[in-house]
Image (cartoon, rainbow over all chains, first blue to last red; front, side, top):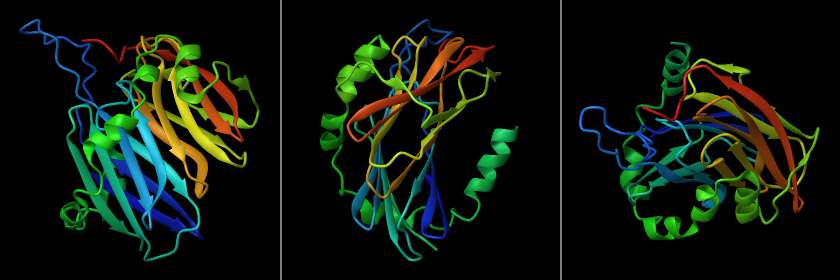
Length: 100
Length: 158
C-alpha cells in the first residue's frame, strides 16, 4: 500500500494506492476454462488522529490496483494517519503515515 | 502510459515509510469486524434502485446541480475509468458511485466523517457504455449527478 498526503492550508489531499488483483469472480482462465475466484478489497478505512474519517466500501467494479483520493480538513503537519484495507478473503494490511 | 507516469509521481517519496507502520498498526482492525459491516446485499443487487435502497435507505436520488461527477466521455479501457464525485453541500454523510449497465451497479461507496470534504476519486471498471451515477447523501437526502461513459473495450470480461 502506498500513501501520499499533501497538505495545503489545513486540508490534506490523501491518495492511496493498493497493489491488489481485484478479481471479479466472473472471469475465466482462458487456458483451463475455470472461473478465477473472486478476490477483491471490500473495505478501506482511513483514520486521522485515531478518528475514522473515511470508511470506503468496494465491490468487484473497483479497478485492479485500486486508487483512492480523499480530502480531509482540519489537518496539521505532524498529524498521524492510519490506513487499513481488508479483502473478501479476510486478508488485510495496515499502514501509519505522519503528515509532513 | 499516462497512468503509469502519474502513479510513479504519486509514489515518489512514500517508499521509505512503507514498512514501518505495518507492524505497529496490525491488529487495530480485525477482518471479521470489517466484513460484518460490508453491505453485501447492496453490492449484489442488480438494480440501481435496489442497491441505493439497501445501502442508503432510499431507492431514488434526485438529480442535483450541487453534485458534480467527472468521468471521461469515452473510455479507451473500461477496466480503468477515473471517476470523481464532488459536492459543496454541508453534512455529507457518504458518496457512492454506481454504473447502470454493470451486472451489479454499485461499484464504490465511502462514508465520510464531518472533517472529510465532499470529494472522492477512484478508478472503476465499466463493462459497456453506460451511465455512471454519483450519489451524495447529505443531511439525510440523496442527491445525484450522472454522466455517460462510452466504453470501446470492455472492462469486465476475459
